[in-house]
Image 1: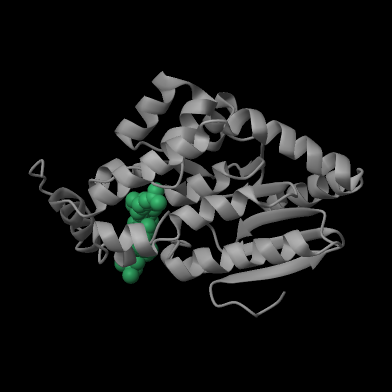
Image 2: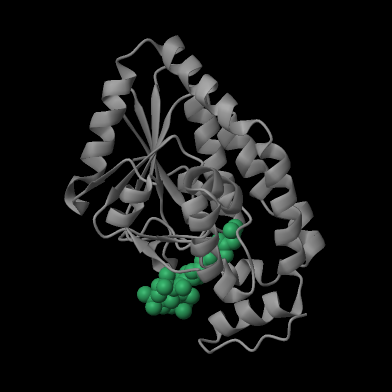
Length: 260
Ligand code: CAA
């Protein structure tokens, strides 16, 4: 394992590059620095000819409880538009030409679920809990959730999940087609590596073009949707209710909303 980063660990296993989110004390909440590090590691693996498939997973019991609310609560809408990593995140993930497998466990929420949804294949451990809980803190998904879940699930299920902010378990996520496979927690990484190695044996160019072709179908108009979603997210982030929701979370109390 390499210690070149602060908030992630990276490892190479034969032709597979592995990124581990590594802020377990805060359930791998994604602050700006962590997202920058993930993107840098993705770029390095993308440019490394020996790496054929990338896995993103985590250290600790949870994949990620989403964007770092403490960091985010300090941002104005304009700060978020100018400095938040959400825009770069999508561009960087989209420019990775190699298949990316997300191996998720425990809480996989908000930006954490959106990070997994931006990957090409998702394997979940039995204890994974998935959701877009932003609505519970007066916000909305800002990393692709409204766009990708709607494409994946259709309007009604996406509305239900995102409007209620409720969590679903790994089995239900598999039934809905969000995750490819559910395995025991002990086997999660091994299963992801086994799948990665199987893909890594195929012709690299064919793998690259299959990914490109599949994404092409899905992504016509997606960029527009993502830009729109981000604008709305930034507006909410600066709203009174957004600030109240985040403050209430940090102060461990019920939020009081005013509709402003
Ligand atoms: N950001 C910052 N810190 C977080 C966090 C987050 N998203 N989620 C958890 N933490 C921190 C907690 O503040 C706590 O730290 P302290 O001990 O210093 O108080 C620590 O991680 C452990 O968390 P809890 O004590 O809350 O653990 P729990 O087991 O009681 O609850 C949980 C777990 C249900 C996941 C709860 O932590 C939770 O609801 N987290 C927030 C989930 C959320 O709202 N995510 C969406 C974020 S917004 C977003 O992602 C926007 C976007 O689309 C880009």
